[in-house]
Length: 141
Length: 433
Image 1 (cartoon, each protein chain N blue to C red):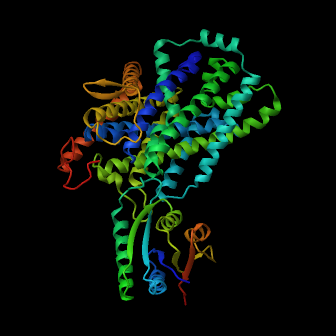
Image 2: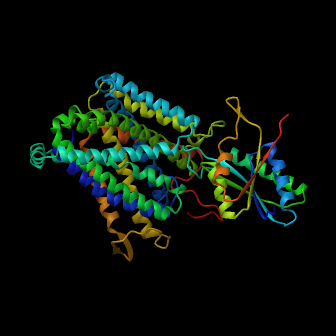
Image 3: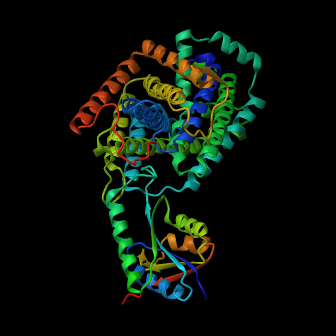
């Protein structure tokens, strides 16, 4: 499979690092583009363009880290910080806008009410993505 | 209870005046698709003082919207348990409980599904339209209606007050303006949404008021069914089966819609407060976001407390609904005045600004195109505002105190923050808009 445009949504978990490395290796041959995006979700009691400094600082830190992970793989990626009500639709919209041919998401092991859970964002992206989706599941010992 | 037999006429006149206001908002929102509504227009059209004054007046409207919406839920729930409607203590406690519950939900930031909101709105509109149609078929009597209107014509003062109170029916205009920033193609969608809102509100409310006056005397409407007139129509239907189906349905739907409206008021005021804070019009502490919940918890809690305070007279006073309505009209009409004036000011001072939705029917004044709708809107809202200020002592004093307190807070805040009162100079390279 060849990928020229990969979208990597990051959330600040350990799985993001491996997902980024995988994205770099998948597209290195074609010298494709990789975008790492972080979505700040804004609650409905705030305006959509609300600037929440601690969240912005945290997001910038995560994106800087992802950039350095990519540099270790000798690859240059673009990063983008987005604000939205819901992360899932925003990721899908970004993939459409950038004409991505792959969304690569890192997923950590999560439980909800005692059961393994993918949350709400991953299922939404899987259901609505305009392209292929690869989930990188971080193995938990 | 205010406009009595002239209720449909008051709603109709308010609707016509509202059209002018909606057109003004359509131009303003398309120009500035940001949170803030008329406060944003005033800040751009005049200066920060005007922006604050409009925003502070809007805040009063939002707080009263929260109180009024919560206050009118228990009467509809009275179908299931009579004390909700008959007991002022149980009714007011219930209303306060609803405000507290919504305050907690919004502080925590619990997700609210848009499916419920949209679904409830569609179902409610469908039910009301159906009720209006059924009411016209089974209850409407033009001769009875005519006599009830003529025999119960209000004083001029009450008619004008009724027109002012009818502005509550159009409370969604500011909310729509606040939503513009997260709408795709707001310059197209918002004007369309405003027009749809005008048609929906006019048709439903005019229809309900005409059917209500056919079904009940104004005295009955003003006493037994003052807070749940839609339930009154259903109760008067001559076909028992329809009554049995519609009465509980209306109780549930009306309760749901009013709950959504209360929540919308709370969300609206917290967004407005954040927007005003970010432009340094109110103390930034009101924009503080909870480190865990990521919600503006201070403004949510503060304004919920004020809404509870406004509800307190519900334990004792019979005319609390009327007073709340007058207070709402005070704030909203003042905000609307600022909106009209700001659009006119922007046409005069900044005619070169992009106007994705530009009002037609303009007259030339000193070489500038001025929309007639905004001129009429400004004159009419100002006239009604002045009249209710003169004739309604509750809203005169509470409204005036609210505005004076607000301006004092503004003055002290800007002085302490070493900021000029009228506008903060833009930094080099900063977007003028």
